[in-house]
Length: 300
Image (cartoon, rainbow, N blue to C red):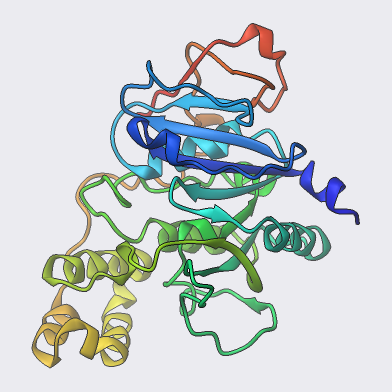
């Protein structure tokens, strides 16, 4: 299938704060839909011609913007990004082709540092089926999803987790865990999806970070979380600072406060209120751009 055909099936979404919007470097391929989700005062944000839609997301937390991206993406396949990610479109389109060919709901690609080094170590260069035991290191900009399957399963990011939320790690892993439990298929693929700075939330291992990581594992594994924490600590005890903090991690049975809002159901998705787009429509029904003005997404 040609690159142009693949591009026309792709939405690239960027989640950022309003004062960081000018840092976005969107793909220049006009066939790709560019969807920007802003938190904060968006009144001064100027949408460049390359943006196809600008969505204002109230509240805090990047997971809210991810959920708005799922709601408003106008194409079959959706890549999640942040304002500091440079998309490698050739790799993403290879991921799109993989999803089309296999019917999987999610392809987890790879990231590189600005000097071209892989950000993680991989055991194989072949596509690998994701399970709860090998998906914990997922980064958001590595996640390419089939929007139709995700919406049909009612999947959403848990807004209690992720950058800007109280539990500021693990939103990607929780989303993948929910996707797998919904009976959908996910693959790790050997394609580079983006360039990202070397430092990120996934490289943090301080005391508070370990507590949040334990909560994430407890959410994913429930009553079976103790062996998962032990296995994780055995592999990562040096990064954790030694065996003493590793043991504290193993014994940490805390869970997240509040209800589990991840599985909202397709019919319960947040509804848009007022609406503004600089160019083409982002809605599933592809309303004319002339009928839309700015989009505010209400989250319960």
